[in-house]
Image 1: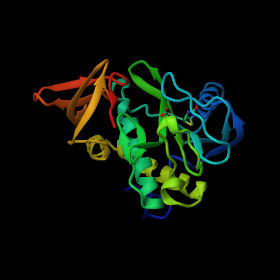
Image 2: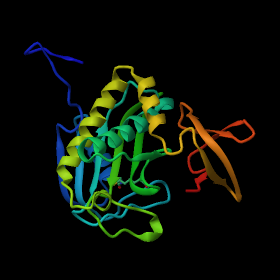
Image 3: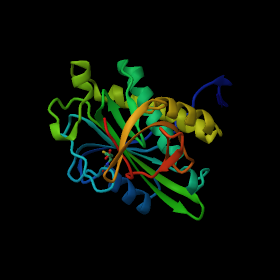
Image 4: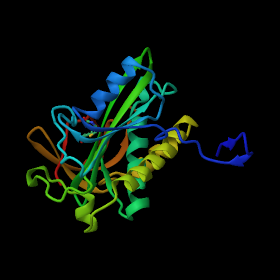
Length: 259
Ligand code: BTN
């Protein structure tokens, strides 16, 4: 733990969440963050939070819909220049376990991380993460970490297999408290990465994965197969041990979980 030089006491450094920009409405907090970092100096750890997104972005090919004022939709601006472009999945791991533990600290609920970084509870999606990195040479110059979390929205499209934290807890929840708890845990795991604690971040991520070391069913193209998740490669590929014992790596969006 770092020493506070003025008081000589042990303290934690808050990189993430010391500067927050609150917007009533924006197309996408990720787009807003990208424009900001290209136009002006934005301190690392700045949070861009919006009540409403008119064109929220999801994982490639998807949009992100959220009822205004009900949920958390925000982006974090990071400058993980200490990471090589090849190591960018570490950000995804640190952020997803931070969200998981922030939710647990505030609400006492454990969510699962569905590889690579979907937030699930009882096989229903309650949130997602969209990370957009800018690469400079071999390093990551900036990272925009977009997080969408269904908190107080009670009615969710059935077709999306989605749920919200309020539905799970059975009551209206405090958005600010959940946000603070999540930011503080992401901060802690980000600092672990800064300090070189990559293995502990990865170990915790693997332990938080839905179906880690359990037999699950997956589909690739028109074929279904069973296997168990045993690892994630440095560049974020999912490593599944097939029933034959063979280890196979899969890229993002190459396989579908059959939940
Ligand atoms: C996913 O599809 O699972 C990722 C969803 C990410 C949504 C968040 S909401 C805040 C940020 N701004 C966006 O436009 N998208 C991300």
